[in-house]
Length: 142
Image (cartoon, rainbow, N blue to C red):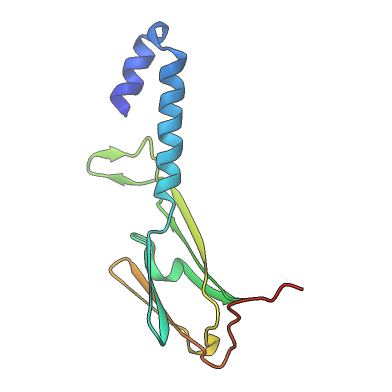
């Protein structure tokens, strides 16, 4: 990316609107994809199991909520922009703050028995099903 920026800045007259918008589109959609929580949801007769990738996000910065049949997973990762190491002071960073959030509709759950664990960047949420709740499968039309 840095090479492209330097190349364009050195020859700004050769830049076309097509190149500008193509780069804009590519960067926009790559950013959107990178902020999605990649998730697997398994259903058995007794429970739902949600496994969500949250790499690099500390356990303390992850929130899991369940309300009105909706499971919400959110997290935030912050990287200190004033980093200095043996290579020198960081002068440009595009990774300073990342927030992610997703919601999943998982109804008929025993809310007081939901469990969550986090290991190696994977959040696992187990939601036991409530077999006592009635599930309507069809609605008569009057």
